[in-house]
Image (tube, rainbow, N blue to C red; front, side):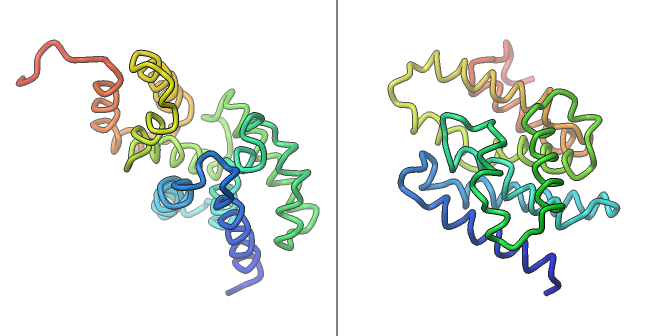
Length: 197
């Protein structure tokens, strides 16, 4: 294992530990049903885009939602990543930390991810796709029992439409997930007029 891989391994270890805290809303499922799936999709995309910096992609995978772990109510505040010192604790140098924070800021802005680096697009597309795999949709309903079905469907429509339109930038991911997206649309209330053809 080279130095970059060692740093990534330590970062991942810290994120896994912190994700397990019962104070974190998603602690029961976050690593297994989100981060590991994002990583699996991202690694497949790295094979399709060999110019991508694989370690940078992996680091972004494990940090792209880190703010949620630190302070769920301020989950898009990149300063939480910086102030947590998780990257410094993992052993990253200042230049690497600055690059990662810059990438996370671009990712969180979601303004024009189609123009972002390939590493950011890989993680963004993988993140969006991961929401259509496993129990992600069911877990949202499970964690929000106080909401009506109509409210849950509206929240999910906003989430999945944003994922599809803004975050899923790579065409091969959209092609691979088109059927899943159609199914999700039905789950959130966009019922077809015909079922058999």
